[in-house]
Structure formats: structure tokens, C-alpha cells
Image (tube, rainbow, N blue to C red):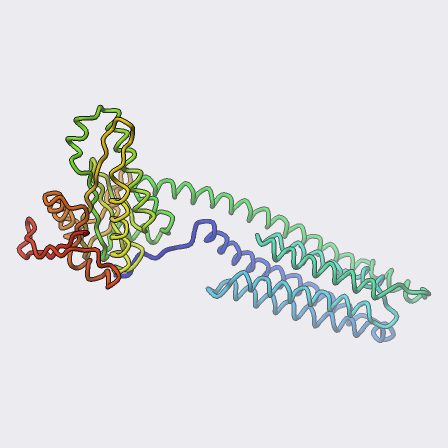
Length: 429
């Protein structure tokens, strides 16, 4: 059975989904704006008298080409944003191409015959600069926003400065400028302003939705932590959680950790000192297990049951579990206070297929690992205590350690309680 997949953090997962949805919305906005502008420019081009077409026809044809390209860019960004191939780099690429199209349109207006920067700024198409800038608020990517803003504003400024000013203003030029503020161009401006207001409204709505979703996911994560180990909850999505509730078979290494002679130790200590000892001991074991990639299944008095392999292969789990056991034993023998005795720890482990599940009802769920390796590890622990050994492993685990770990003494085969076949055991030398 494959190990449990490790998912990205909640924040990165939400941001990735937000990026894709933002690009889809931007694609739709590009399609709507470009379609509106294309129809408007086409209508203007058809109604222009021949003498004006001779002056402005080239710029208007460029505008038609730019808006058509802008529409195709919207279609492409919408399709890719809805596929699994989408990455934030795609959004940056689309935005840069968008900047090129807008600057190309401004350049065409400025370099038309008898035109200059004044004519370009009077055209309703200049509002495309504002639309492109406002579209960036749908994203939560400061780098893309900054890059687009710097390139677009600096490019527009450069074109305006290069375009210069007209030395002599003719009556025809004044008439064209006045025409750019007639009813049809002003209607286009109103549509542009409506688009800008809509984009800002959608951005506010998306921010609100994202905040609500983060709050909901955080609450769900808190609920999971009531019955699942924290080491697992951050790597689980809803599908993984549902599979855990049904139960899944996995290959795992089971590690039992127990404090040697805890009963006698607790009799010599008072209740407060015993509680302090257990608190220190459990915290130390939990940290060590977590640092080595394991999961604390449960505490049973002074005993701790841990599992390795829920998020990696069995070979990796064996190496992690053995390293963890060595670290736990090396960290024992400490004194909690000047007058308190030290304590020592025994570790034992076995491996094999287990059932990993979250059992119980909606009111009380419990993460657990069930199977023969759990019972075998408990019996190996009993053997280790009887023989006064610190760490004992089975032959299957030793075989997975490879040649790099030779710190083991072969104890031979020993019968374990409830098992007909003797088990090969090895102890840490």
C-alpha cells in the first residue's frame, strides 16, 4: 500500500486555488472588455468618412487587431487556469503579454498621421491601462502586480514623452479631439468605468470569501486535532480523512517506548513529582518521535505507542524508527531535579501490515493502528524488559537497515507469547 500522500500546507493550498480562480476571472474580464472594444472600434471605423479613415484607419485597424488578440489571451488564460497545468508563472506571462498589447495600441495611436500623445490620451482606449492595473487586485501576487505596474506605467509615460506635442493645432485636429468626447466614446468610457467598479467589487468579494474559507478550514483543522495526531492533520485533506475513517491497510513500523520500573519509581516519588516526571517524559518522547518522522499513536501510563511509515516507505520507516529509539534511549537517564532519581527507557519495535483508521462516531473519534505488528512489538518490549536490554528489534527491521548500521547484537530466534514461530531478535550493542 502506498504511503499517505503529503499535501501542501493550508495556506499554500488556498493560495494556489486562489491563483487559478483569479486567472479564470481575469480571463473572463479580458474577453468581455475586448469584445466590447472590438465592436465599438468596428462600428466607429465603418462610420468614419473617407478623409478621416485615411488619417485614423491604420490606428483603428491596429486597435481591432489588439482587441482580437486580447480576446484570445482571455480565452487562453481561462482554459489554462481551469487545467492542472496552471502555475503562477503562467499568470505573469499572460500579464506581460497584456502589457505589450496595451502599449502597442498606444503606440499606434501616437504614431498615426497628424496625431500625438494628446490624441492617444483622449481616446477611450487609454482606459485599458487602468483596467489592466485594476485586474491585478484579483490576484494575491505582489510580484506580478509590481512588475505589471512598473512596465505598463513606465512604458506609457515613455510613449507619451516620445509622442511629443503638436506645434500647430489645426481645426480638423480639434474636431477629432472633440469627437473623442462625443456620446459614443463617452458611452465606451462609462462601460470601462463600470468594468473597473465591477473588478474592484469582485476583488473585495474574493477577499471576503478567502477569509471565510480560511476560518472554516482552521476550525475544521481544530476539530481534527481532537482525535487525530497533529503530525497528520496538517497533511490531510478531506479525502484522506474520509479514507482514514474507513480504514486503510499500510506497512508500518510500530515502536513501543516504556519507562523501566515506573511503578517502583512512582512509589518513591510523591504525586506531584510523578506527574512532573510523566510530563517531562512524554514531551521528550513526543518531540523525538515527531523529529524523526513518526506519529505518537497513544499513551498508556508510562508507555508510548508510536508508528512510522504512514508518510513514507517501509524501508525509510525502519531507519527513522531505529534512529528515534537510539535518540530516546540516549536522552534518558536524566534527573528532573536535584533530589529526584533518574529514569531509563526501553524501546522495542516490529513491522508489517497494519490497519490505520480513525474509529468511533461523530462525538468521539480516535486515531489508531491495529494489527499483528502492534502485538508483536508489545511482546518484544516485554522480552527487552526481562533481558534488561535498551533497544530490541526484529530481524525484518534489521534487514531493512542495510550495511550502514552494524550496532546490533544478534540474539537468535526466540518464541514470543502467542506466536508459534520463533522470531529473530537483535539488541542495540
